[in-house]
Amino acid sequence: MFLEPHFSGQRSGWLEVICGSMFSGKTEELIRRLKRARIAGQKVAVFKPSVDTRYAEESVVSHDSNSFVATPIARSASLLDVPDEVTVIGLDEAQFFDEEVVKHTQELAHRGKRLIIAGLDMDFRGKPFGPMCDLLAVAEYITKVHAICSHCGNLATHSYRLTPDTDTVVLGEKDLYEARCRRCFRMGNMLDLR
Image 1 (tube, rainbow, N blue to C red):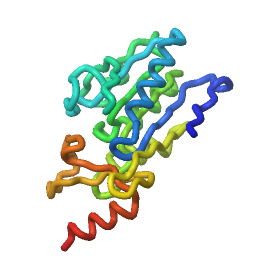
Image 2 (image 1 turned 90 degrees about the vertical axis):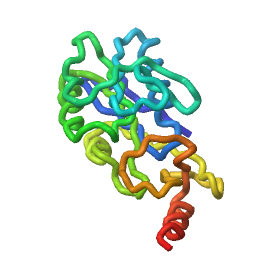
Image 3 (image 1 turned 180 degrees about the horizontal axis):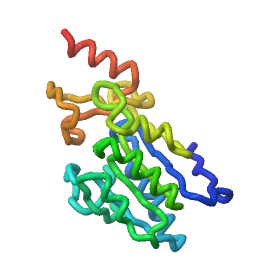
């Protein structure tokens, strides 16, 4: 059961990080929180890395086709240009941002902004992905969401790549990746090493 962080006592800015494997609902949860902020009358701005063009160039889109208008940016320094009236900032696919995103999001939190950040915590090798580890370390609130293992049906925490490509960043969907539990992820990698 998911419990949304309780914010009534929070007076300054903060970071919320939503992490997990592919197909776990990270973007869906990001969009849900952004919509609630907008319903509450808060000014919202959403950003995504410009390299992520899988569904739409100017929207964050979940695997269930829910979407929220977003601005693609090439460098995280662009976040610092957000207008003062914006109180809630969403970031999707944070693992693709440069390492400076940690410094810039903290600066925005110091300015009183609420940042909701979604991203993969591990790459296809099961290693920390980009700046996500550091974002998790400085966040006030962390939500880890899980997919369902495509092999055994247990909770999945890993993104398993179905192709032999060894580049860290390979954009794709169910044609290139599966969600797997720890055991099935390890078994698949052991078979790949033969």
